[in-house]
Length: 385
Image 1 (cartoon, rainbow, N blue to C red):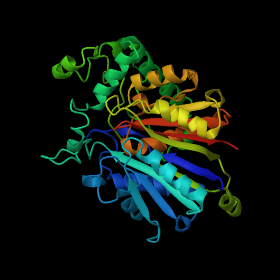
Image 2: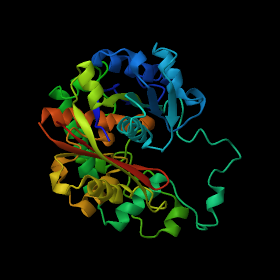
Image 3: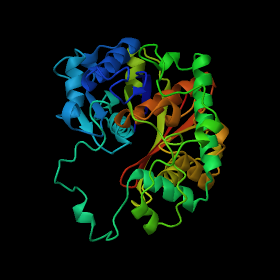
Image 4: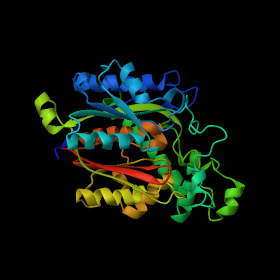
């Protein structure tokens, strides 16, 4: 297979996923279109050359229904000949879009592809795709008679199983904000942003004491009776917020880049996707990391930088416990707890941040992984030339 390489990667600033957020007035297709326009302009390519655009969106309802990626491609002014599709692997939707685009390039099905993602949680609330009176999980009741739980409860179960204290969780959340605020102060996000504006949920003034004062966000007496091991440690402070945002990455064959006179910034080294216990739901990043390293033929120690999606602090800390990764190499510019988690955009947002951080630190190998609803995870390894 030929090498699939990254030419350009951009993201929008991440806004609060509330009606008061800076991006609430932007239709999500227009938001994604702005990322797409910036991407091809910075790369200096004619969008007519793009063979396909693969986008991620989680809540495909309302403004995000009806193949939002195709709507965004047309709203961006791309030629009508450029096709598009929207995929749903929950929080990993746009990371999966990256896999599809890169694997299509490697196989020869595409010469040039764009992977992207968007989520406007202020306009299309999480869960709004489930119609009243319907139950998409009804067929699972035979296999899981006690029922599955929401992600917040899964995060609590992870904290309990790995014996993660409230102090550890809050300390991790504080460090995420500290790193993100420092990265902004140093201008480290400037190159990846489609336009210069702050990510609204980064809180430079937060402290461990402020975080310690927040109440548990998911306490439910019925759940407490079912799972007495839970000590209720997950708060709004050590979990990712609701957000709006979009991101896009330009991928092509190394031979195509050479023909067009474009400089490859990284190549895709390995991919993995896996499933795990849907009750714990958020732990699949552990086997996914092992799987992608095995496919790449690399030890964990070979990875210079990691991006592990901070859906909850307990998820990253459990992953670190099982992998032994050095946290000083993980989410070096802060993670979703601070920057935000616009669900369908987060996979490409993480890749965009990882690529730029690797360049700024002269790192060679980077690994990205993120947990996904239903007990799944994607993992990706990229390598700078």
